[in-house]
Amino acid sequence: MNPARRVHPPSSPGGGSIPGMADCLFCRIVAGEIPATIAHETPSALVFHDIAPKAPVHLLAIPKEHHEVAASVAGADPKLAGEVLAAATEAAAKAGLTGGYRLIANTGPDSGMEVAHFHVHVLGGRPLGPMLAD
Image (tube, rainbow, N blue to C red):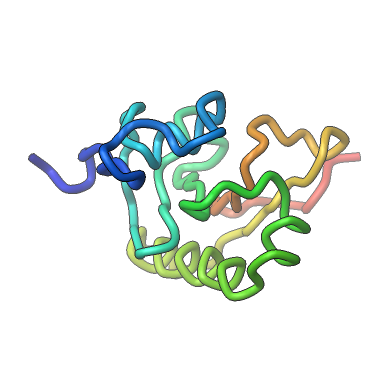
């Protein structure tokens, strides 16, 4: 099987969902219940391709442990927050984003956050233009 297409193995003993996170899409990806195209993986972080890309390269970097927003992961485990950022940058390098890339971490409903599991978007592969549209 192509390692880029593999499903991440379950992270909880005996497989299945992470306790209490059965409704979290990203926890289900980590648990191996939903397939994802894996771009990079570390013991604490997973980076996979977005299913609705907004750029030629659009990856999502997540902690394997559930944290809803940046403040929760930074407060509970600042080292883990750094590990997610490190995984995002390593995945960007593996994807060949030598001309630069953008990291975006949406937090809360006003940001457009769609999945309540802390994640960092890695966008690149073309000039991305201004940060926000007017």
